[in-house]
Every structure is written in structure tokens, then in C-alpha cells.
Image (spheres, rainbow, N blue to C red):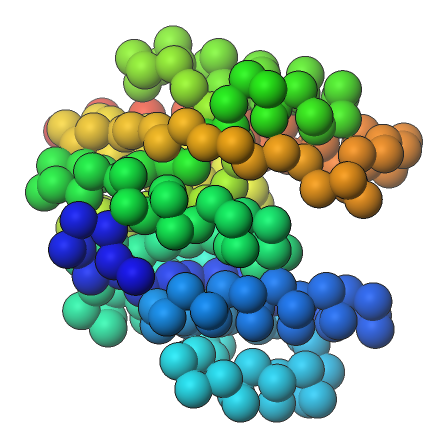
Length: 244
């Protein structure tokens, strides 16, 4: 499955903490494998049986994180994926089984993967966005608005999966280890400042029913994530400007 003839390789990260999460990730990665695309996974700290499951998938490459952080995992998976010769790297979180089974084929088919497409994001429709928990909507609406102001294009910058032009992959190595989830917004800002387009493919990507409840721990996680996202956006704008 390749969008507009471009060669695509998937990059993702895993860290299975318990039996429930291991089962969830197994099922989700099997759904991702059905895309027929090569997959690079940077796993951090999962137990040997889970890593054996990863190694058993014929199209899957297991990459070692560059350092023990989310950014270290992202750097390893994205750089390894680009090394396969792919024109675009599709980064995604590993637990989006609903997107993998019902949204990914259309997303790839509709993505306009031309040479100046820096990042192409899977973006939720307004109806889909409204299915997510209220505080998550608040934090993601905030970073989406900031991205629209700085990057000049309104849209959903927070759903997760996006295609990254291989010409921009070297910039992934410059992301600070503490950036956390802000690494994505760092790359969107970096692409924009380098003169590449940041585009959206709007689709029906609703919140899975079992993720619609919201607890205090979830709100704290979203607040931390918003802090990281704003930091990544600012760092991307500043770094790109210094490089001209």
C-alpha cells in the first residue's frame, strides 16, 4: 500500500508494561502489518516474549532506541525507516488499531506526496474530534490553534499519525531528549520553516469507545503533553530560523 506511488515505511515505538498492554499492542501491530508496508519498531523495556512477537513478524525491523526516552525511540525508528529507501516515513503510535483497520488505506490513498510535502497529517473531522474526552479536546484545540497561528494553516495537529518527507528526517536527530511528545510539533515547525508544506488529510477518526472516559490522571497527562507540544513547536521555530 503506497500513496501516489511513493515508497512508504512505517515507524513506531512500543513499551509494553503489563499483560493487558502486551495483548493490546500485539493485536494493534498485527492490524498494522496487514497494510503490507515495512515496519520499524523501537521497543523500550518490554519483556523478551513480547520482543519475540515483534521479531516473528516478517516485515518488521526491530531498532534499538538511541537513548532511554520516547525521543530516543522515535529517532531510532524514524531514522531506520528512512534507511530502507522510503520516500516518506509514516510515524504512528502503536495502539491505533481502529485507524489501522479503517482509516489507514484511505489516508495513504489521499495523501499528496509531492517533493515539497514536508509532513502530511491524518486529521480528525469536527465530528470525530467531538468524540474525544473534554479535557483532551481543550488541550489539543489549544496546540492546534497555536500551530495554525505559527504555521499559517489551520487543522488538527494532534491526532498522531503523519507522513514525513525523508529529506527532513535528518532533523529528527536534533530533537532534544526531553522534548517528549513535543517532537512531532518540532518537526511540523521545522518543515514549515524549511519551506515545505504541512498538509492535512481529514477523515473519520473517532475516539475508540473504551478511551472516552476521563480521569484525573488522564487530565494530568494531557496537561504535561500540552506543555511538551508547545515547547516542541517553539523549539522547531527557533532552530529552523537559526539555520535560515
